[in-house]
Image 1 (cartoon, rainbow over the protein chains, first blue to last red):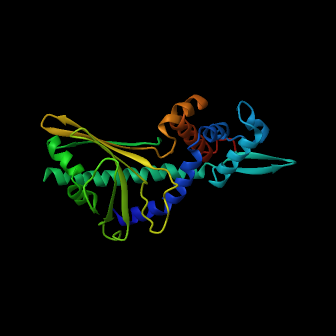
Image 2 (cartoon, rainbow over the protein chains, first blue to last red):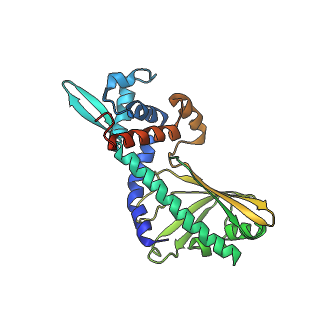
Image 3 (cartoon, rainbow over the protein chains, first blue to last red):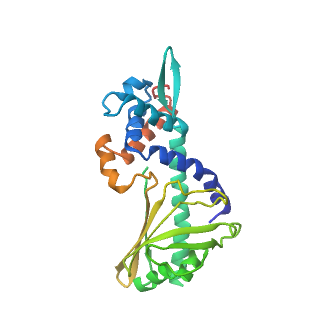
Length: 115
Length: 157
């Protein structure tokens, strides 16, 4: 495997893990789903249809904000939440890198057992 | 896009040979490029130094899950936890499964690495119910959205 690819993975993996962890929760995944049409929504709108309290939803939104998956914008007295697609794009390329690492490891295995 | 990686590869060697290359710690170490300290044992952590040039300072760790002779070898690890001094223990662990099937005198090997989304399997059903579709579909939705945005036909957030 190319060292540069591995170094790239090392740099990406810390961020990727944060994003994976943020998305690794059904409530937060549902919130991302609500925002993935590009809409801007208030906490009240995001609480709609969820069985959780406003406080709980707000806590989940803070986790997503921490991973930069969503960001909030001030609109008068309320905050509106919007999806930031970049970190999700990043984890997609991270998965692709891990996938290509497996390709090289498995080709070494192939050479090893077939020699 | 999916939260799992799956590879299928045909190996021109019998399953017994492939099983040994996967589960004998010295043979595994030879092709995977890690110098392991001892044999694989289910439930035990395997530890070794990476031997790939430039990464000899990296300690590799995985926990052996299942060893079903000539059928299934599985491990969990922190994927590419290769930066020294970083504590990866709170980060998601993935499950690596090597499945072997005889194919004539050769072997069909299926590798999967899953769990990048860190949702425990027991809660995955719940996640799917809550979202109607789940991770894979969400990723697809997001991809479509991002593609639409980059082509200027999105919602202009």
